[in-house]
Amino acid sequence: MNEEMLKEQAKQIRRDIVNMVGAAKSGHPGGSLSATEILTYLYFEEMNVKPEEPKWADRDRFVLSKGHAAPVLYAALAHKGFFPVEELSTLRKLGSHLQGHPDMKKVPGVDMSTGSLGTGISAAVGMALACQMDKKENYVYTVLGDGEIQEGQVWEAAMAAAHYKLDNLIAFVDNNGLQIDGNVDDVLSPNPIDAKFGAFGWHVQVIDGHDFQQIADAVKAAKAAKGQPSVIVAKTVKGKGVSYMENQAGWHGSAPNAEQVAQAMEDLK
Image (cartoon, rainbow, N blue to C red):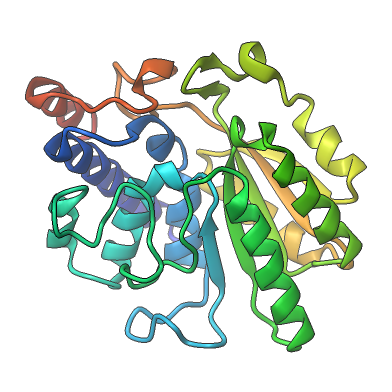
């Protein structure tokens, strides 16, 4: 693993997130920035995908269950080569295939259309089960928000994944502690997240979600855990890397103005 390369890639993805949302004057920067290292590691180090053949049958799958964080997914896909980086500037614009939430019918590399919270993890469970039944050796990865896991559908999916012993399923919970209405603990506490998944029969790890080595070690351990699905609870900072956005719930779904974009670019030099 070239950690310095991954750090530089993550920084560029963060610049893209801010520029995209700023240009669109709409979007979700906070939770995109908190999940940046996770997607950077998966796309540029871990996942077996072919940008030139997005629908390759034996590819690893990725489902962004917290679909509102589409900017981080689009930036990762573009830099991986699924579509031109220049298209990122069209986010949420009329006629663009880069909608506010990922659309699998329009964006190369998107494996599942998401946005309605809870449906992504459910689809990922179905994909993992199908791959298991077809005796494929690929993996299905998904990223959930900690606010998202307040949805009951998430726990139905968790129960099914453990029941079918889906050890080809690796989920990340982007545990930044904030959601659109404020602190996750104040809105409807999902804690303890690790113990809940453990009670449902999952292999559980808790890591620093901005540390590439910890992410790499956790994925390796998840792949070694046989007979059960894995969840990696990633402790993160909402708005990571942009000084005025960090740990501010207000940046869940707000767009920076031109002056704020410029400040973010300074922060991300």
